[in-house]
Image 1 (cartoon, helix red, strand yellow):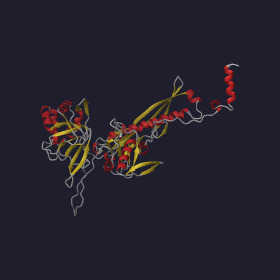
Image 2 (tube, helix red, strand yellow):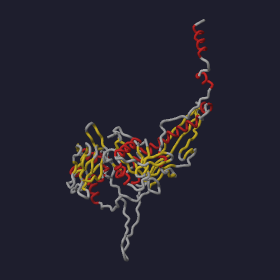
Image 3 (spheres, one colour):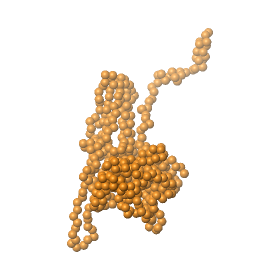
Length: 468
């Protein structure tokens, strides 16, 4: 007897039934549908009110307001040296309409870099204001005197902010608050004297300042809007004021953005391999999921219409201690009426939970679509992993009012497009190639609009890595 026959004989004597490996050849395998990790809850897409847009464009008509150049200033860093981008000086109210690049470049060269340690005072209340501060890096507190003589924090400034701009146009300006560094700060300063010296040698700047000083001061309400004259509390036959509501002459228009891809499937796969699941349907399902993930990412981060880039500067807040505390969330809520929701990265929600735990607070939660969502002051805090987290482990928390009727934030789309499978999302057959490959064009159209500035607020530079 050979060795092989001996081994087979031993196996036949020890095995008394059909083996599992052989039995699987006759069994039907139960399969799951294709899975993907990219799918998230997409609460923004679910909670945003969507407005039908005809013609692909949505125009936001507003009451006339006078812009004062309240954007942010951008810098370039080379080693330890920091320089302001000349065109960014146009964000200062004094230089808002000034477009001479040579004049701006000369002003940028005259900006002096200064470093301040934590706790150091940059400007003192009541002293002469003769220079503007451009904050390249760090955090600064604006401190005033409270009603009982103690110090009160009026606001917190962070990277890209500026203060003291009134010193450039008014030689007699005084500091109305104290500016104190909370962290190590790098700032650039531009003095009133430097501005005047450049103006003496630059005709365009000299003419710009002359025109600016000759303009009558615009009457506005506290929101910067042209006033509506009214009379109240009068008696008898008082002469009533006449008025009208002026509109912005060039209102902003939002054009629908697009996300597209071409899905390719070989005819052999589409014809033969459709049991128990249709291959074409599964390919389309996962492609649509990826497209919706990209759509939500764009609604948060797109530079033209994304929420993070369309929040007005006076609606951007800085956390007082870096971490997202209940006090900061209250401040964010106080900036608008009828806040409907918060959006925060899951790690920011965890950081806020830690701060609540330190104070012995337990935020309530509510049921939304079968999900328990945490709230603050009754406003739900929805997770959104599309909000970026920086390398320094900081992120942002968004708060907004929604809906056209509430003058809030709205989503824009155009339902009724050809080959639509969902509102404003279509799958269009493109044909079969010579290689027998079927192509489908998958398209979705979308955008977002902020109807009035206070509908959207952002708590920026929120630390999520502090555990003590």
